[in-house]
Amino acid sequence: MEFTMRLRKIPSRTKTDEILATSNKSSKKRKKNSSFVCRRCCSAFQMSVFDFPPVWSELRKKSQLCDGLVRCEDGTEFKIHRAILAAVSPYFKALFTNSINRDQKEANEARISIPADIFQTLLDYAYTGSCGVTKTNVKDLLKYADQYQILDVVQLCCNFLMTELSPANCLEILKFASQYFCKELIDKGKLYIRHNFSRLLKDSYEFYNIPAHHLEEILQDDELNIKSEETVLDAVKIWISYSPVKRKIHLFNLIKCIRLGTLTYDSVAEISKWPLIIENPECKEYLQDVLAVLGGLNQDDDVDIVHDYMFRPRIPFSVVFAIGGWSAGSPTNFMETYDSRADKWLFSCDTDSSPRAYHGLCNLNGIIYMIGGFDGNEYFNTMKCFDPVQHKWSERSCMYYPRCYVSVVVHRGKIYAMGGYNGRTRMNSAEKYDPERNQWELIPSMQKQRSDASAATVQDKIYIVGGFNGQEVMNSTEVYDTTTRQWSFISQMTSARSGVSLVSFNNTLYAIGGFNGYTRLASGEKYTPDVSDGWSPIADMLTPRSNFATVLLDDYIFVIGGFNDRFVSGSTTINYVEYYDAESNEWYDAASMNVSRSALSACVVHGLPNVKEYTFLRTGISSLGPEADGGNKG
Image 1 (cartoon, one colour):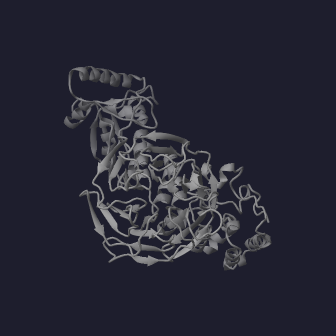
Image 2: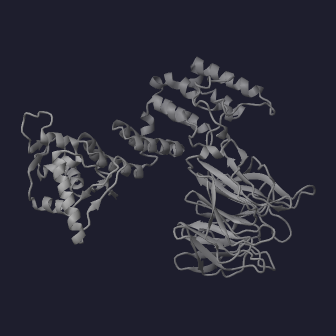
Image 3: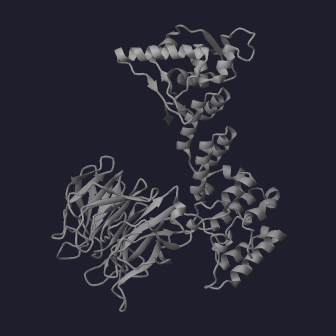
């Protein structure tokens, strides 16, 4: 992979640069009367603009007007223009002008200890404003660009390394960035490590050699993206076990990084049996104190989990937004967010002004889009979007048709809205939205009319299942090929389902719940395109439901709220939440929403810079590390 970028340069006011300024002025004069375009570049380091006229490359190529020579460590010689090289590098400017020894005349030759191919790339930048940065040259290029003070190339290298971050190399890149004080790359590297820590443990060989204080800093971070504190324990075990004799002196400080109060009593008891902990008096006593605290807690006991480090949950990388729905006999505009690390639902004050239900909801590039729906009187063709960073709602282009009970998916940067009910008829029409143009476009209609269906994507195809056509609940399934723009039927589901939810996970479709014309369903079934012969059953949900919201979070399928007709007393809308583990084929309870509602929609937003504002820790934290909190509160 090659990364090319243009950066801005600041011309200084020396005699050398007056020559450059004159060259620039003449270039600009010629620009009015000729068709050539100067190369322009921009950088985070500078604020002004500097041009790279094509004539510079021409002079370099033909070795014309050269007034300097640079000899590399292998003897390779480069004829150069001293003024041009001095413009990009304060080092060469001082060298050629002899500004250090002013009594000496200006130099026109330089010997440098730099590989010829690297210097060739630096010259590419000096003459054109761009250079090729690749995986093979980026480290040497950054090293020598830093040594010879060509800061724009340093920035180019940092930008390239940001695009190359992976679980396998992020620790190595962070270490490398720290050597050259590349702040932006350091910050991006630390953020990447926090967000991808579980994958890093599996893929990074550098983890075994990370210094103890760096490991402590990572493990204490509130934004460490882990499902459970057991991942932190695994990290401690992996690092200590690599060299136990030398590293066991750090065990106590590392064990204190684990937020043991978020684990069960049995889990902590199992940790206390680790031989290295038993051998360490400090660790052994600490675990005993934690067990005493956990063993003495009652269900109704109040624990300050915001400020007590041992009990404080991490800040999640991903947040669920559940918006609208039908509650207490009317549509609502409630917005709740789910903090998966604290397992709590929180009300948000960022509600839209108009209640609606049976709408579509999706996240595209960090913006939440709410599409169509019904407010008890009107069927909407409108679309609103919510910016969770700015806490702001705004209007977007309207669809061609009103759609309530609409099926919505995101595919390759476009939003697709299919079927639904317009107040008169169930629809088979479909349309897609381009956010860059803020326009809807009709696409070929489905083969069947469907409202209250559900859709999901696998690879380049969009699948839609079930629904109601005005006469019957359906079990048919259609697929839309976005390349050929054609709809076709695939294997039918084993059960008819309206108010169903379809989710795509690991290239497999999961159709869950719904209404079969007689009762709400707890059942679900799955289908893997191009692999399965048909749909096969999965474990039943704990609670039958239809018209509920579904999201994929932490590799689990969450089902949220919905309608249940088995409750003989009170409202039939529910607030129950549960999640499905596809690996174990089991359902588990999660915290319930604050409001019972059906016909709601939900989506997940990842990596918000202000994610804490939507989590349980939004009340604020006065201190971060276990030492600042006074260690174990037991």
